[in-house]
Image (cartoon, rainbow, N blue to C red; front, side, top):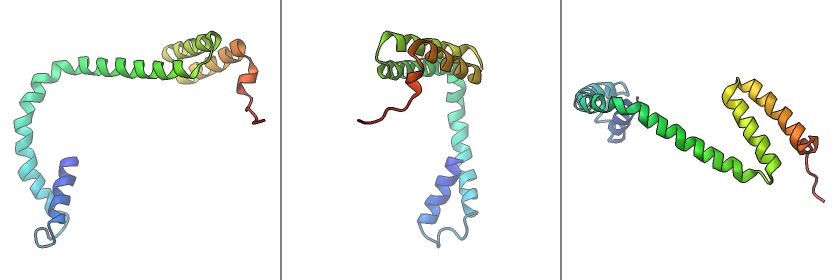
Length: 121
């Protein structure tokens, strides 16, 4: 889709003398895009066994960044424990059960006052 859009827009930008309608860009996509696909396809096929590893690395890095951000938001060990239990509930149960377990754990460990809005004084 990006190749089709970019080739069409590039031809339209060159002027109306180069392209009569927006549908003329489809022809340039098939003329330029498909041969490029046949050149790139062997490289993609060669690297296909590495895709699960790349996905795993991406997920690990995302988890690290999320954990670092979450740990910077808590203030004491009790909040940290509630956060870890909530995160484990999200990873083990369905999302609504993880959310419910998190609310219960936070209310039990940190107190209900955590959910009250803070008034500026």
